[in-house]
Image (cartoon, rainbow, N blue to C red; front, side, top):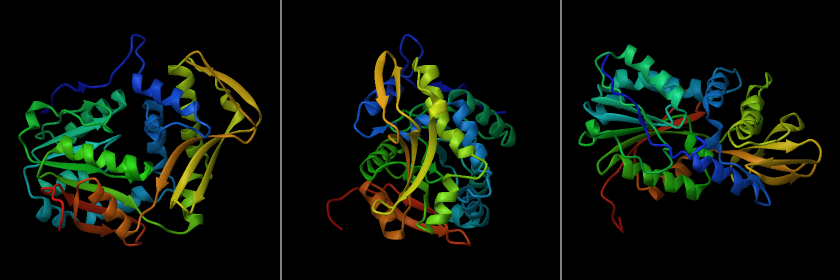
Length: 328
């Protein structure tokens, strides 16, 4: 097995709490519309719950994306070429990654994720599957520029961002993320990114409010994490999961709704919610070809090729970090 020790780039305070997590939660709960960024779903418990979601019959994106990855390998190999270091942003369990690695003959694999234990376990599993491939896990907040391990700094890069995670962000933060990815990967890098597509409201709502209640547990786990890591007293049993389609912004929204008036503390700060008030926990924007291409270009990436699954529910787009210029 070829592997290096994982690198940790998370900024913890003296209590071992991620400083950015505390800052985001306190700032978000202080807003008129309370909100917590979706990236904080993914502690180890949240990461496992998300993996459970991907196996649900209602949740089509993972199956659709795996269909593209498993059927388009020759095209990926031709366009991407061999010898690139694959840098996966928010790698999670890396279940889709082997399909890509088998197709393109990479030089190394660098998974980036904020859930450290989950990251290291997934990296070990992938190393066992690809014993000759150098694997360099990095525990980091990938929404900011990441300094990659020295072993791959001079190697051409392919960023891999599957699962339509880009849709979790409002357009300006999504463009910022794409720009930071460009900085992480460098000039001449390529990016293979998933974008979910606009489809029927009923199909979308079902995918984010499944009959088994797994997505509800995933959402409520965020409140439990706040209680556990930030000395919170949120009455989780008085919150419920809510998923709605916002047609104006072309997105599914997830919220935690108070079922009655509640009061609680987080890190010594007092907060209150009236019955029916929500904490906005996630957006999942859905794209069409033009809106996806425009977002990529705003982030410094030039689209090269786009693939859809057979049911035309999901897209994978290959883009390139070309030399930036002010005019066509």
